[in-house]
Image (tube, one colour):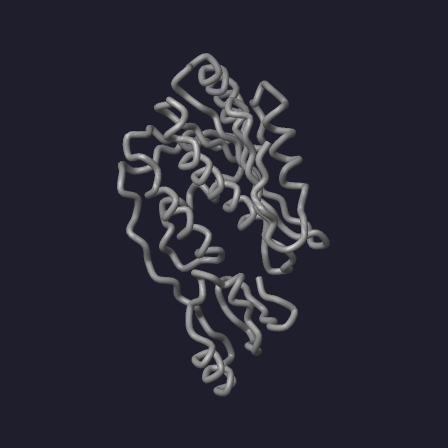
Length: 239
């Protein structure tokens, strides 16, 4: 996302045109090359520029455990119902639900809700026609890792389940360093993942359409948090 003063067309990490005025406040840690280099490239009138982000070390702990990935949608919904019921009756487990939403008129956002802790986090991506729902769903998963880090020391749970309805986002967690659209978000996920206590049993669950969640609260709350999109970079919201 770039300000109106510095516009570029971006898709699959390819810049189609370059102009001055990139807003450093947004680029932050994702600034791939310095402005002088951008000016030099722009003067060469390139057809496209591929931005490469530095690779990160993969997760420090064991490989991620993904649930329901080989099931059909109907089977995954049934399995989600059973799993949520088991988590609700386990004092040592916590369920976390993520969602993402993109609207061309209002922008994109990701959200995460943990009903057991009565906590929700949201983050707005702002307006950019080149964002897709995929990036917004990934931000929801990123917030789930941040939420776990935030509360892990104060709450005595040994297992955390992250539920998301986007199967492709879960698959990409195994390939965070691949040069694909939205790569910078997955590199942030990797950084957040490595900050989580290594003794925490972390499981990621595909729940298509957020179905199979017997209680409507997490489904409605997560969807509602995503739809409360403000201007610019919305502050994280706690409830």
